[in-house]
Image (cartoon, rainbow, N blue to C red; front, side):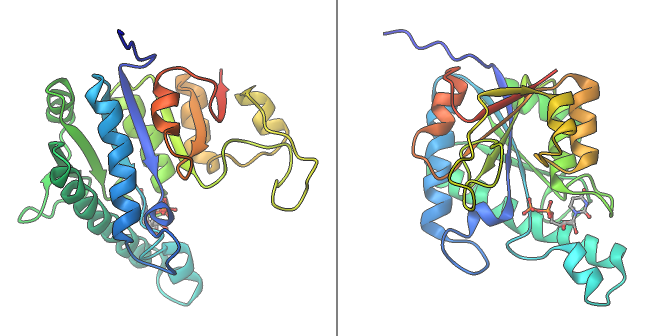
Length: 239
Ligand code: UDP
């Protein structure tokens, strides 16, 4: 049977926490391998995959800032944390036969190559997975914003935000048993209802660029493949 994915190029946002598994911090090997296996599945059917990886499992600038550090310095530490995650992710990809390239928004020339847009596009065309590290390269931003930014830059058809919950709910499903999941919703509705899908900067960028966001569960096996096959997985936030 012929498989025809719904998307040709996707931007997958993985939070740092997604790499922790059930650990308290850091990178859980089994978890990262499972996530990479899902990425292999979608890459195999010809989908071009770019990943923005977070750093919250190692360091979060806001927390460092509130603990008394200079916020910008703390944010640079957070961006460096994402570089560590990106290296681990790319390594796990190589082990599973995917060719991955890490591109950093901050120059660390002995370790990773710098982000150069045409080069990233070339890698994607070649079927390589590009892992964007160091967020936007600027303090006071988040990797969600980096996902929106890189997604727009590379012409991704959708930003896939992998979370622990399988979509956007009317209320916190952990607290309210009557909460229901949206199958889809418009940007304006998401703002009006204050649903907090991404931080405001990231969200505004996606809305302005009419770049849809799909929120889905990274824990549910096969969810990423179902998303790229256009199945009704998670929640689609659209213009
Ligand atoms: N960060 C930053 N600028 C960016 C992206 C990230 O300063 O463009 C810093 C910020 O301190 C953030 C940390 O890196 O707390 C880790 O990123 P994030 O919190 O987005 O990771 P996630 O929540 O996805 O694990």
